Image 1 (cartoon, one colour):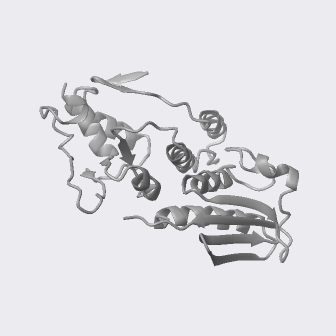
Image 2: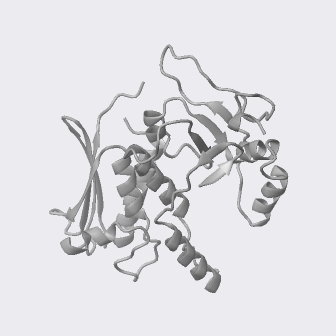
Length: 111
Length: 152
């Protein structure tokens, strides 16, 4: 479905981002969906305001420079998810209060 | 448009050029910064998105690999029979076709700049569909008519 190294790249960037901004908690989830799989990474950090979601995906763009970073992690995830025909959703974590990132990847057969 | 021997190649501007230029400027000012970290992966991810979105034309595909199979799933889904060259093999091919004077000189320059180049001289066809015969040919030898660019 997804090349293992690509999955590691995708989850690695999301986990690194969550760990950087979390106060103390990060949750990683996965769930089967009828057409594929849904991966979730959420944290209890400050999150991203709805109006800033598009800006958060700009390559090299940084909404908050109080912590080190390159501004590339979420852009890499966005491009990779799109390349696999999936969808990426950024929102507010209901359980932890910080950023919630959901990645839906379609199931497909690779010969 | 860039021409390598008789093969036309389109150069695509990436949205990461400005980011890279800023990163280099920042690192020049402060060597402790790692602003350019991740730019390689970001560029690959951007390219994969262009490929899957149909913005890369069908036809002969050259994939330069370095540092692992990042993106292979997308590439093999779109192009099931690519020729895969490592950077070292690509440089050797360019030298064999006299596009550059020496692959060893470039490799030495890369090493002197502190970058690590994989030692593998990978030059192989990708995974084929069941029942499909490879059309792969030895691209490192310039004298073969079916090689890169059809010879010098």
